[in-house]
Amino acid sequence: MTILQALLSFSVVAMLLTILPGIDSSLVLRQALVRGRGTAIATGIGICLGSFVWGVAAAVGAAALLAASEFAYRMVTWLGAAYMIVLGGTLLWKAIFSKRNGAEAQAAAAGAEPSTVPASPWRAGLVGLASNLANPKVGVFYVATIPQFIPHGASPVLMGLALAAVHAVLTVVWFGILIVLATYASRWLRRPKTIRAIDGVTGTVLVGFGAKLIASPTA
Image (cartoon, rainbow, N blue to C red):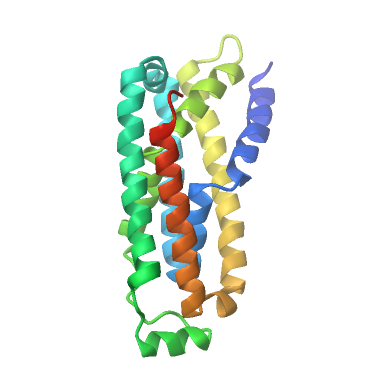
């Protein structure tokens, strides 16, 4: 297998992982619909950076150690689960108990931007980065796949970085598509009831995913 063949083959696997519904896509969609395109882009960049960090870790063997050590894996899993549950719980609280003011409701009904102050791009990026790094399943994915796509004689570190870059590019493209679609649909989807529903669904997914991580026995 040549380096080009390895990159092309890995891109197919990585694309399937990217387009599957999950936490990352839910966060980007939620930000695009509730906070706007800029915040969604910042969140997506943070998620891509997190994937790249996992790829680098796998390339240098750190993620392999994580997969081999049940104790280390469980510690990271519980920390990740706690973050997911707190983030999801916050969204659920907003969806159930938070009341939006009349000015924002009128702006949303007119299809305008929400009147709340947009989240800082840095904060949105950190949320995306943390949500990705808090998910050890991403690291396990890299550990399970990257070794299979390193041609004989190629540098494992450089090849791992190249494969992680391929995944990052695919993720950027996919998030771009989601953000564009969400932007066009924003006139109908930015209504207060819809925003609360989005918060509720995203929060439920995050809490459920965190609970699943805690219940999961091993990688």
